[in-house]
Image (cartoon, rainbow, N blue to C red):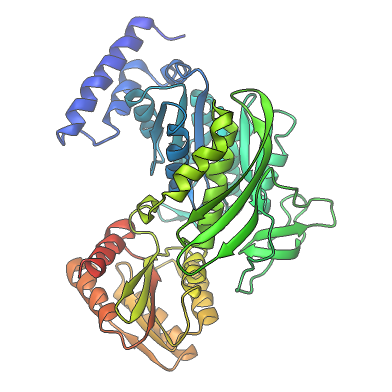
Amino acid sequence: MVNKLRFNIAKFGAKIASQVSKLGFGSGNNLPGHVFYKVAGKEALKDLAYEMNVGPILITGTNGKTTTTTLLIKLLSCDTEIRKSFESNTIHAITTGILKGSGDIGVFEYGIRNKIYGIPDTVQRLIDPVGVVYTTISREHSQVAGVKNPFDEYVDAKSLLSQAMTRGVIISNVDDPVTANIAFNKQEDVHVNFYGLAIDDINDIFESESPDCPKCGKKLEYSQKFLNHRGIYSCECGFKRREPNVKLVGADFKPDNWDLTIEGNLYNYTNNKDISFKVTINVPPFGFHNIYNTLASVCTYATFTPKIANIENTIKEVFNNLDMSFIPPGRFEVVKLKDKYVGLGQGDNGDAAKINALFMNQYIDGPLEFIYTTPDEHEEEIFEDHLDVIKNLNPDHIIVVPGRKSIEKAQDYYSIISEEFDNTDFYPLSYEKMDERIKKLVDLAKTSDYGYVIMTGCGEEQEMWENIKQKLINK
């Protein structure tokens, strides 16, 4: 227990900082957390977190964190008051979310790329989460501050967020062998609720090498692949995919909307009892990756809602009235422009680009143009993954544009692509003249002679992609 007077002074200072941050001064939206941390000291975060009678939930993973967090906030807010923060990867953001909100449950996105910057063990000790949610873990965000981060260290950093848990529930994607293994290893200490797919209608269109078993290191065998390394897997050592507690059991993929049937049999922590539900929701055709985000948010909601009688009605209310604004700015979306479909959004790693291609593939019914925005120097692994996506889509025409700073490196990537495809063009657009780059990308999409256009790759993430999207929509 920290000094009570100092604790209260820190909270008061954070409250003032919250008002100051609204005026645009200080260090932005996370200023209250910085002030509290500075005045009360880091150990005071324990007492702050314990003000929530249920506790904090942390969402982490390589992809899907922000969308899952956003959906979970929508669901839980229907049943109870919560504290929240998203699109964050600092302890100060979590602290600010606790300080600014009220309620017994907290929902906080927490991105982790390595142990040094992510301090996952420190966050776990100080925040003491009652829930840790794993979306998916893949070989994408492996470079931090210009330094290559080995994949096993990346996985270890994610694992540390839940490794010392002695209470609560881990919610994990059972179709992902890496996240499933993290949860398997904690089943004797805490409850585990898995989510995944249980239908035959979703199959990966890309050929990819199976990953190694996280237990013994041998190659996993797959009877079905849903998306990249996510699927139904097993290993001769005995490691295998388990039956999910919350699963997609039915899907009707129509052009304008999807009917998804979700079944749940899981442990509810807040009421300390096992529960069951089954619900069919109607959603926009938002891409197969968002089915996983939906399952992650529904599984976590059903695990922690205090009002278990409301589960089916709340899920229907949130998802049946969903619009595409729930997708974070800059993320992939398909826009209809008179006689053509344009799919665009950031795909700054192989997994994201493949997901974008799978989403676009639902619409393609004719010649395709690929407007590809390249990675930078020292990002050859990302390019190799992108090139696999391009090869699998096999576009009729490719336009290559620098996605980051180096025009010279983009030219190198273009040379490799042009050896594979004859109908290829290069536009050396400057990073320093971002407005001109955006204007040209918008013009390329609008004036394309092709009925189907996909524009993805690297870039200034949300800002650039959202700017392009809005200029196309508000033409």
